[in-house]
Picture 1 (tube, rainbow, N blue to C red):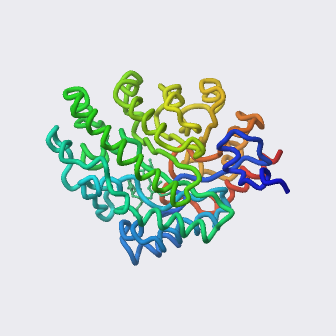
Picture 2: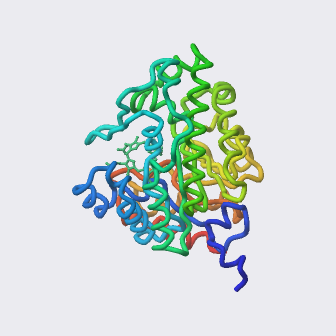
Length: 344
Ligand code: CP3
Protein backbone atom coordinates (compact mmCIF):
# COMPACT_ATOMS: atom_id res chain seq x y z
CA UNK A 1 0.00 0.00 0.00
CA UNK A 2 1.32 3.44 -0.82
CA UNK A 3 1.92 5.95 1.94
CA UNK A 4 -0.84 8.12 0.50
CA UNK A 5 -3.61 5.54 0.56
CA UNK A 6 -2.85 4.82 4.21
CA UNK A 7 -3.68 8.40 5.10
CA UNK A 8 -6.88 8.29 7.18
CA UNK A 9 -10.05 8.94 5.15
CA UNK A 10 -11.04 11.87 7.37
CA UNK A 11 -7.72 13.65 6.73
CA UNK A 12 -8.01 12.98 3.01
CA UNK A 13 -11.52 14.45 2.93
CA UNK A 14 -10.38 17.56 4.84
CA UNK A 15 -7.94 18.21 2.00
CA UNK A 16 -10.54 17.57 -0.69
CA UNK A 17 -8.80 14.37 -1.84
CA UNK A 18 -10.68 11.35 -3.21
CA UNK A 19 -11.99 8.93 -0.58
CA UNK A 20 -13.40 5.38 -0.64
CA UNK A 21 -16.40 6.54 1.49
CA UNK A 22 -17.58 9.72 3.19
CA UNK A 23 -16.02 10.09 6.64
CA UNK A 24 -18.26 10.98 9.56
CA UNK A 25 -17.88 12.31 13.09
CA UNK A 26 -20.45 14.06 15.23
CA UNK A 27 -20.23 17.21 17.28
CA UNK A 28 -20.70 16.35 20.98
CA UNK A 29 -20.12 12.68 20.18
CA UNK A 30 -18.93 12.27 23.79
CA UNK A 31 -21.67 13.51 26.07
CA UNK A 32 -24.76 13.01 28.15
CA UNK A 33 -26.67 10.92 25.60
CA UNK A 34 -24.25 8.09 26.49
CA UNK A 35 -24.96 6.07 29.66
CA UNK A 36 -21.20 5.49 30.11
CA UNK A 37 -20.56 9.26 30.05
CA UNK A 38 -23.32 9.86 32.59
CA UNK A 39 -21.78 7.20 34.85
CA UNK A 40 -18.41 9.01 34.79
CA UNK A 41 -20.16 12.34 35.44
CA UNK A 42 -21.74 10.90 38.61
CA UNK A 43 -18.21 10.67 40.00
CA UNK A 44 -16.55 13.83 38.67
CA UNK A 45 -17.73 17.32 37.76
CA UNK A 46 -17.64 18.50 34.16
CA UNK A 47 -14.62 20.74 34.78
CA UNK A 48 -12.72 17.94 36.56
CA UNK A 49 -13.43 15.70 33.59
CA UNK A 50 -12.01 18.32 31.21
CA UNK A 51 -8.96 18.89 33.41
CA UNK A 52 -8.03 15.22 34.01
CA UNK A 53 -6.17 14.05 30.88
CA UNK A 54 -6.76 10.33 31.53
CA UNK A 55 -10.51 10.86 31.81
CA UNK A 56 -10.78 13.36 28.95
CA UNK A 57 -8.88 10.93 26.70
CA UNK A 58 -11.00 8.02 27.94
CA UNK A 59 -14.34 9.63 27.02
CA UNK A 60 -12.92 10.75 23.67
CA UNK A 61 -11.73 7.23 22.85
CA UNK A 62 -14.96 5.69 24.13
CA UNK A 63 -17.10 7.71 21.72
CA UNK A 64 -14.89 6.78 18.75
CA UNK A 65 -14.93 3.08 19.58
CA UNK A 66 -18.62 2.93 20.39
CA UNK A 67 -19.77 4.75 17.25
CA UNK A 68 -17.15 3.73 14.68
CA UNK A 69 -16.67 7.36 13.61
CA UNK A 70 -13.67 8.46 11.54
CA UNK A 71 -12.20 10.96 14.01
CA UNK A 72 -12.20 11.87 17.68
CA UNK A 73 -12.74 15.40 18.99
CA UNK A 74 -10.78 15.91 22.13
CA UNK A 75 -13.00 16.24 25.18
CA UNK A 76 -12.77 19.82 26.46
CA UNK A 77 -14.82 23.01 26.31
CA UNK A 78 -14.60 26.26 24.39
CA UNK A 79 -14.81 28.26 27.63
CA UNK A 80 -11.65 26.78 29.23
CA UNK A 81 -9.44 29.34 27.48
CA UNK A 82 -11.19 32.14 29.38
CA UNK A 83 -9.65 31.06 32.71
CA UNK A 84 -6.00 31.84 31.95
CA UNK A 85 -7.23 35.09 30.37
CA UNK A 86 -8.55 36.09 33.80
CA UNK A 87 -12.20 35.01 33.60
CA UNK A 88 -13.00 32.10 35.95
CA UNK A 89 -15.86 29.87 34.75
CA UNK A 90 -18.20 27.41 36.41
CA UNK A 91 -20.77 24.88 35.28
CA UNK A 92 -23.51 24.82 37.93
CA UNK A 93 -25.54 21.62 37.84
CA UNK A 94 -28.42 21.71 35.34
CA UNK A 95 -27.64 25.26 34.29
CA UNK A 96 -25.56 26.60 31.43
CA UNK A 97 -21.97 27.75 31.95
CA UNK A 98 -21.32 30.87 34.03
CA UNK A 99 -18.57 33.45 33.86
CA UNK A 100 -17.94 34.68 37.40
CA UNK A 101 -17.06 38.30 36.59
CA UNK A 102 -18.28 39.15 33.07
CA UNK A 103 -16.72 41.92 31.00
CA UNK A 104 -18.51 45.22 31.42
CA UNK A 105 -16.31 47.94 29.96
CA UNK A 106 -12.97 48.92 28.44
CA UNK A 107 -11.21 48.68 31.80
CA UNK A 108 -12.22 45.04 32.31
CA UNK A 109 -11.00 44.28 28.77
CA UNK A 110 -7.66 45.99 29.51
CA UNK A 111 -7.24 43.68 32.50
CA UNK A 112 -7.58 40.53 30.35
CA UNK A 113 -4.55 38.49 29.29
CA UNK A 114 -4.35 37.73 25.57
CA UNK A 115 -0.85 36.29 25.61
CA UNK A 116 -1.83 33.33 27.78
CA UNK A 117 0.61 30.76 29.06
CA UNK A 118 -0.64 27.60 27.37
CA UNK A 119 0.92 25.52 30.15
CA UNK A 120 -2.22 26.40 32.12
CA UNK A 121 -4.25 24.42 29.53
CA UNK A 122 -1.83 21.49 29.35
CA UNK A 123 -4.58 19.05 30.42
CA UNK A 124 -6.11 19.28 26.92
CA UNK A 125 -2.73 18.80 25.22
CA UNK A 126 -1.96 15.83 27.48
CA UNK A 127 -5.34 14.32 26.65
CA UNK A 128 -4.53 14.67 22.93
CA UNK A 129 -1.23 12.81 23.43
CA UNK A 130 -3.02 10.05 25.32
CA UNK A 131 -5.64 9.74 22.57
CA UNK A 132 -2.90 9.44 19.92
CA UNK A 133 -1.23 6.66 21.91
CA UNK A 134 -4.51 4.81 22.51
CA UNK A 135 -5.80 5.07 18.91
CA UNK A 136 -2.82 5.76 16.64
CA UNK A 137 -4.87 5.16 13.45
CA UNK A 138 -7.66 7.63 14.28
CA UNK A 139 -7.17 11.33 13.68
CA UNK A 140 -8.00 13.63 16.57
CA UNK A 141 -9.55 17.06 16.19
CA UNK A 142 -8.45 19.87 18.49
CA UNK A 143 -10.81 22.79 18.97
CA UNK A 144 -11.46 26.21 20.40
CA UNK A 145 -14.25 28.73 20.48
CA UNK A 146 -14.10 31.42 17.82
CA UNK A 147 -13.59 34.96 19.14
CA UNK A 148 -17.17 36.21 18.69
CA UNK A 149 -18.79 33.28 20.49
CA UNK A 150 -16.22 33.55 23.30
CA UNK A 151 -16.81 37.32 23.48
CA UNK A 152 -20.54 36.70 23.83
CA UNK A 153 -19.98 34.44 26.86
CA UNK A 154 -17.41 36.80 28.37
CA UNK A 155 -19.79 39.76 28.08
CA UNK A 156 -23.16 38.13 28.79
CA UNK A 157 -21.74 36.00 31.61
CA UNK A 158 -23.35 32.86 30.14
CA UNK A 159 -25.71 31.82 27.40
CA UNK A 160 -27.95 34.46 25.87
CA UNK A 161 -31.03 34.85 23.76
CA UNK A 162 -30.60 38.31 22.26
CA UNK A 163 -26.91 39.09 22.92
CA UNK A 164 -28.01 42.50 24.16
CA UNK A 165 -24.87 43.35 26.16
CA UNK A 166 -22.54 41.98 23.48
CA UNK A 167 -24.12 44.00 20.69
CA UNK A 168 -24.47 47.09 22.90
CA UNK A 169 -20.70 47.05 23.53
CA UNK A 170 -19.95 46.24 19.89
CA UNK A 171 -22.00 49.18 18.60
CA UNK A 172 -21.18 51.69 21.33
CA UNK A 173 -17.44 51.14 21.86
CA UNK A 174 -15.97 49.62 18.72
CA UNK A 175 -12.40 50.12 20.00
CA UNK A 176 -13.03 48.23 23.23
CA UNK A 177 -14.85 45.44 21.37
CA UNK A 178 -11.95 45.18 18.92
CA UNK A 179 -9.46 45.01 21.80
CA UNK A 180 -11.48 42.15 23.31
CA UNK A 181 -11.62 40.30 19.99
CA UNK A 182 -7.85 40.77 19.54
CA UNK A 183 -7.11 39.29 22.95
CA UNK A 184 -9.46 36.37 22.34
CA UNK A 185 -7.86 35.80 18.94
CA UNK A 186 -4.37 35.77 20.45
CA UNK A 187 -5.34 33.39 23.28
CA UNK A 188 -7.23 31.07 20.91
CA UNK A 189 -4.35 30.99 18.45
CA UNK A 190 -1.94 29.99 21.21
CA UNK A 191 -4.27 27.27 22.48
CA UNK A 192 -4.89 25.81 19.00
CA UNK A 193 -1.19 25.83 18.13
CA UNK A 194 -0.42 24.05 21.40
CA UNK A 195 -3.05 21.41 20.56
CA UNK A 196 -1.48 20.94 17.12
CA UNK A 197 1.98 20.55 18.66
CA UNK A 198 0.52 17.93 21.01
CA UNK A 199 -0.74 15.91 18.02
CA UNK A 200 -4.11 17.27 16.87
CA UNK A 201 -4.16 16.73 13.08
CA UNK A 202 -7.18 18.99 12.40
CA UNK A 203 -8.68 21.88 14.37
CA UNK A 204 -12.22 23.21 14.53
CA UNK A 205 -13.34 26.70 15.51
CA UNK A 206 -16.80 26.79 17.09
CA UNK A 207 -18.53 30.08 16.34
CA UNK A 208 -21.80 28.67 17.58
CA UNK A 209 -23.55 32.00 18.03
CA UNK A 210 -22.18 33.90 14.99
CA UNK A 211 -25.64 33.53 13.43
CA UNK A 212 -26.89 36.22 15.81
CA UNK A 213 -25.08 38.76 13.63
CA UNK A 214 -26.21 40.63 10.54
CA UNK A 215 -23.94 39.85 7.56
CA UNK A 216 -22.53 43.39 7.59
CA UNK A 217 -21.73 43.15 11.29
CA UNK A 218 -19.97 39.82 10.79
CA UNK A 219 -17.89 41.44 8.03
CA UNK A 220 -16.98 44.47 10.11
CA UNK A 221 -16.61 43.17 13.65
CA UNK A 222 -15.67 39.49 13.25
CA UNK A 223 -14.18 38.55 9.89
CA UNK A 224 -10.85 40.45 10.28
CA UNK A 225 -10.16 38.56 13.51
CA UNK A 226 -11.15 35.24 11.95
CA UNK A 227 -8.73 35.88 9.08
CA UNK A 228 -5.85 36.60 11.47
CA UNK A 229 -6.69 33.56 13.56
CA UNK A 230 -6.86 31.23 10.56
CA UNK A 231 -3.59 32.66 9.20
CA UNK A 232 -1.86 31.88 12.52
CA UNK A 233 -2.48 28.13 12.15
CA UNK A 234 0.05 26.05 10.16
CA UNK A 235 -1.13 25.67 6.55
CA UNK A 236 -0.68 21.91 6.64
CA UNK A 237 -3.28 21.58 9.43
CA UNK A 238 -6.84 21.63 8.07
CA UNK A 239 -9.06 24.10 9.92
CA UNK A 240 -12.83 23.69 10.10
CA UNK A 241 -14.89 26.77 10.86
CA UNK A 242 -18.35 26.04 12.21
CA UNK A 243 -21.25 28.25 13.14
CA UNK A 244 -25.03 28.01 13.31
CA UNK A 245 -27.48 30.32 11.61
CA UNK A 246 -24.78 31.46 9.20
CA UNK A 247 -26.81 30.97 6.00
CA UNK A 248 -26.91 34.74 5.45
CA UNK A 249 -23.13 34.99 5.15
CA UNK A 250 -21.69 31.58 4.24
CA UNK A 251 -19.37 33.21 1.71
CA UNK A 252 -17.68 35.10 4.53
CA UNK A 253 -16.97 31.89 6.43
CA UNK A 254 -15.16 30.74 3.30
CA UNK A 255 -13.35 34.08 3.04
CA UNK A 256 -11.87 33.55 6.53
CA UNK A 257 -9.39 31.21 4.84
CA UNK A 258 -10.66 28.11 6.65
CA UNK A 259 -10.12 24.98 4.57
CA UNK A 260 -13.40 23.39 5.69
CA UNK A 261 -16.73 25.14 6.34
CA UNK A 262 -19.28 23.59 8.71
CA UNK A 263 -22.89 24.00 7.59
CA UNK A 264 -25.92 23.79 9.86
CA UNK A 265 -29.21 22.21 8.78
CA UNK A 266 -30.90 25.50 7.91
CA UNK A 267 -29.07 25.58 4.56
CA UNK A 268 -29.34 22.86 1.93
CA UNK A 269 -25.97 21.29 1.28
CA UNK A 270 -26.39 21.68 -2.48
CA UNK A 271 -26.85 25.42 -2.01
CA UNK A 272 -23.78 25.58 0.24
CA UNK A 273 -21.80 23.81 -2.49
CA UNK A 274 -22.84 26.39 -5.05
CA UNK A 275 -22.04 29.30 -2.76
CA UNK A 276 -18.67 27.94 -1.63
CA UNK A 277 -17.13 26.48 -4.78
CA UNK A 278 -14.03 24.42 -4.10
CA UNK A 279 -14.44 24.47 -0.30
CA UNK A 280 -14.61 21.26 1.68
CA UNK A 281 -17.95 21.13 3.50
CA UNK A 282 -18.93 19.53 6.79
CA UNK A 283 -22.48 18.74 7.86
CA UNK A 284 -25.38 19.00 7.96
CA UNK A 285 -28.09 16.70 9.38
CA UNK A 286 -30.52 18.30 11.83
CA UNK A 287 -29.59 16.60 15.16
CA UNK A 288 -33.31 16.29 15.95
CA UNK A 289 -33.80 13.88 13.04
CA UNK A 290 -32.13 11.30 15.31
CA UNK A 291 -35.28 11.41 17.46
CA UNK A 292 -37.33 10.22 14.47
CA UNK A 293 -37.67 6.74 12.97
CA UNK A 294 -34.75 4.97 11.32
CA UNK A 295 -36.44 5.28 7.89
CA UNK A 296 -36.44 9.08 8.21
CA UNK A 297 -32.78 9.11 9.29
CA UNK A 298 -31.93 7.00 6.24
CA UNK A 299 -33.91 9.25 3.91
CA UNK A 300 -32.16 12.36 5.22
CA UNK A 301 -28.68 10.78 5.09
CA UNK A 302 -29.31 9.77 1.48
CA UNK A 303 -30.50 13.29 0.68
CA UNK A 304 -27.29 14.82 2.06
CA UNK A 305 -25.07 12.28 0.27
CA UNK A 306 -27.01 12.90 -2.97
CA UNK A 307 -26.41 16.65 -2.64
CA UNK A 308 -22.68 15.90 -2.74
CA UNK A 309 -23.17 13.51 -5.66
CA UNK A 310 -20.06 11.47 -4.82
CA UNK A 311 -17.78 14.52 -5.02
CA UNK A 312 -14.83 14.52 -2.63
CA UNK A 313 -14.51 17.23 -0.01
CA UNK A 314 -17.41 16.28 2.25
CA UNK A 315 -17.28 15.31 5.91
CA UNK A 316 -20.60 14.08 7.23
CA UNK A 317 -21.68 15.59 10.54
CA UNK A 318 -24.74 16.97 12.26
CA UNK A 319 -25.66 20.61 11.80
CA UNK A 320 -24.99 21.09 15.55
CA UNK A 321 -24.15 18.87 18.52
CA UNK A 322 -25.90 15.64 19.55
CA UNK A 323 -28.51 16.46 22.20
CA UNK A 324 -29.00 14.70 25.53
CA UNK A 325 -31.68 12.02 25.14
CA UNK A 326 -30.67 11.06 21.60
CA UNK A 327 -30.97 7.25 21.26
CA UNK A 328 -27.45 5.77 21.14
CA UNK A 329 -28.64 3.05 18.74
CA UNK A 330 -29.79 5.68 16.26
CA UNK A 331 -26.42 7.44 16.42
CA UNK A 332 -24.62 4.15 15.67
CA UNK A 333 -27.08 3.43 12.85
CA UNK A 334 -26.41 6.88 11.38
CA UNK A 335 -22.66 6.23 11.19
CA UNK A 336 -23.24 2.92 9.37
CA UNK A 337 -25.73 4.52 6.98
CA UNK A 338 -23.18 7.18 6.02
CA UNK A 339 -20.39 4.66 5.50
CA UNK A 340 -22.52 2.19 3.55
CA UNK A 341 -24.51 4.74 1.61
CA UNK A 342 -21.41 6.57 0.40
CA UNK A 343 -19.20 3.62 -0.66
CA UNK A 344 -17.56 4.58 -3.96
O1 CP3 B 1 -17.62 15.50 21.75
C1 CP3 B 1 -17.38 16.72 21.57
O2 CP3 B 1 -17.94 17.38 20.67
C2 CP3 B 1 -16.29 17.38 22.40
C3 CP3 B 1 -16.70 18.06 23.55
C4 CP3 B 1 -17.29 19.45 23.54
C5 CP3 B 1 -17.97 19.94 24.68
N1 CP3 B 1 -18.22 21.26 24.50
C6 CP3 B 1 -18.29 19.15 25.86
C7 CP3 B 1 -19.38 19.59 26.74
C8 CP3 B 1 -17.22 20.50 22.63
C9 CP3 B 1 -16.67 20.51 21.24
C10 CP3 B 1 -17.79 21.64 23.26
C11 CP3 B 1 -17.83 22.98 22.65
C12 CP3 B 1 -18.72 23.99 23.24
N2 CP3 B 1 -18.87 24.31 24.56
C13 CP3 B 1 -19.49 24.90 22.50
C14 CP3 B 1 -19.53 24.96 21.01
C15 CP3 B 1 -20.29 23.83 20.45
C16 CP3 B 1 -21.75 24.05 20.40
O3 CP3 B 1 -22.47 23.19 20.91
O4 CP3 B 1 -22.17 25.03 19.77
C17 CP3 B 1 -20.17 25.72 23.40
C18 CP3 B 1 -21.15 26.83 23.03
C19 CP3 B 1 -19.75 25.36 24.69
C20 CP3 B 1 -20.14 25.98 25.96
C21 CP3 B 1 -20.90 25.03 26.78
N3 CP3 B 1 -20.35 23.95 27.44
C22 CP3 B 1 -22.28 25.03 27.02
C23 CP3 B 1 -23.25 26.03 26.44
C24 CP3 B 1 -22.53 23.94 27.86
C25 CP3 B 1 -23.81 23.60 28.50
C26 CP3 B 1 -24.81 23.12 27.53
C27 CP3 B 1 -25.24 21.75 27.89
O5 CP3 B 1 -25.36 20.95 26.95
O6 CP3 B 1 -25.45 21.49 29.08
C28 CP3 B 1 -21.33 23.25 28.07
C29 CP3 B 1 -21.15 22.03 28.84
C30 CP3 B 1 -20.66 20.84 28.08
N4 CP3 B 1 -19.61 20.86 27.19
C31 CP3 B 1 -21.13 19.50 28.20
C32 CP3 B 1 -20.33 18.71 27.37
C33 CP3 B 1 -20.38 17.23 27.18
C34 CP3 B 1 -22.24 19.02 29.13
C35 CP3 B 1 -21.65 19.02 30.48
C36 CP3 B 1 -22.11 17.90 31.36
O7 CP3 B 1 -21.56 16.80 31.29
O8 CP3 B 1 -23.02 18.15 32.17
